[in-house]
Amino acid sequence: MGSQSDWATMKHAAETLDALSVSHQDLIVSAHRTPKRLYDFAAGAKAAGYKVIIAGAGGAAHLPGMTAALTPLPVFGVPVESKALSGQDSLLSIVQMPAGIPVGTLAIGKAGAVNAALLAAAVLALNDDSLARRLDEWRDRQSAAVAEVPSET
Ligand code: RP5
Image (cartoon, rainbow, N blue to C red; front, side):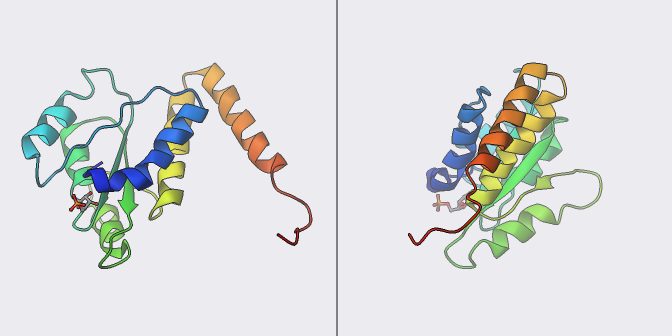
């Protein structure tokens, strides 16, 4: 994520990965304030053993696109809800990548963070039958938690 302030959103990705027993590292890497950290992380991510990168950032959100430019790994971008433009700026910054460097862009905010984790897990599950079963179970629990009729609360 691009900032400590993104953690309130990106912790939902971390929690979802935890629920699926997918190991992950949660790092602050700012495209603007720590460009060398970004370069070193993204350029070395594959060699370091990472498989998928989830990049969450807000405002003029260069982090996902710059990360994708520096690694062959799949990169999923989460637009963090900004104060000024409610995350519309983040979304458009991340989703409108020119052809050639893809960023899989999720929804703004918590939904995007959760779904980025689920999508990353689905990619990893292509080569991990145990994780594929955990993902199926996660969906089954989600379905079971939906009541058939609404309550008054
Ligand atoms: C972006 O600027 C970050 O991803 C964050 O969403 C936004 C604001 O950062 P802070 O000023 O809160 O550090 O780079």
